[in-house]
Amino acid sequence: MKEIMIYEKTGAFAGNKDIARDIRLNDILPYINDKDKIILNFDKVESATQSFIHALISDVIRQKGINVLDRLYFKNCSSTIQKIISIVTEYMQESNY
Amino acid sequence: MKIHLPNSVWIGNIDPFLKAFDTTDKDVLEISTHRKWVSVHPVVLSMVTALGLKMRAEGKEIKFYKPTATSKHYFERMGLFKILELDSEMKITEHESAGRFITIQVIKDSKQLDKFITDMIPLLHSEPKKVEPIRYIILELVRNVFEHANSNEGAIVCAQYYPKSNTIRIGVADNGMGIKKSISQSYSPKTDIEAISLALTPGITGTTRKIGGTESNAGAGLFFIKSLAKVNRDFFMVYSGKGMYKLLKNPKNKEVKLIADPLKDHSSYKNDYPYWQGTVVGIDLCLDEHSDFDNLLELIRAFYEKARKERTKEKYRRPRFI
Image: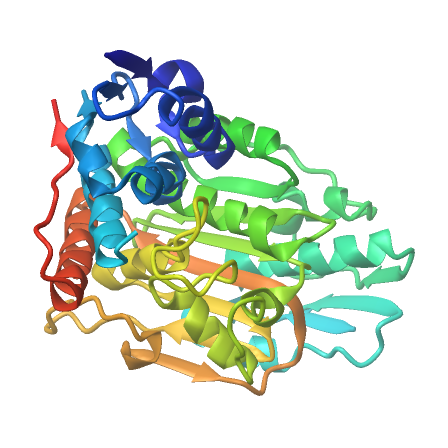
């Protein structure tokens, strides 16, 4: 189980898509497989933009399939971040990735 | 080019101001102001700055006719003359800006944007929950400029707080390729207003025709921002090329429903404005108690849930929050 502390990379506001892309490419995609789980820990992150969360997880869903959500955990999310993650997972499932 | 700053411009009455923008002589920019009093939405200052910076970059002349209005110091305080390297001949005592306005900012890259987003929070003197949508809007609009506009002068941002209405007004302008050219990479809009309409439709992005977008673009940013204004019953406008779309205030007695087609919103739109090379976005945001960001996000989530249910019968996988 790998845990990624988002705050260490973004600070209190997660809005920089370049950082989201780096986390996806360097910390999520190489490590997530059929068995291993990843925790995205948003502790101390107050808010995020839709485009940040999209850049963080949409291509993980596209590449690994929607079942990847069983192995990707979102920890310590504020209510705003929870809602944005829910929006991104909604439209990714609408699009069939 | 000639641009005249009249007595009063806000999004609700911006149409005549835009119509009067004269683009015929591209070798000189003439800026004139109402002789007695000028009160303008920050989006107007963003536009004037964007035009001026373009002229400066092209080595062309800027003529700013000496303002006589008693409110002329506002331009100086907002940094207009300094950015355009003009001598205002004004000497002012700069009072603390915190809680009242964000002076005109030229943001050219992610590093500058990150710094600005961090620095602007104390400027707004407000509770974190109220700052959240403002920070969100500015960040998404400026990133749109970086990703879609290809503008040498970057994004020009300006904001002003109006205590009487407890409203913040925000303007972002650029001199980039404009929405029609950007969206035409994937779609074939015939007019600027058709392109603006596509850009405001959820799921549509210039980078792909695929629903759900690419790994970096979902075509949701402008839809989110328009929705924020709609839920809040505030004004929102987009001006690009010859097209201008304006979301009108949603009547208070009418329930707010988010819909995909922006032209079906309570709005006005036309495709016969003087040509603006680039894109201009203006928004008002009331900071009253009802303006809850989480509430807006819940409405957007419900909107996407409905769209998903209409499109697929597959069992929905929920994200796991721990």
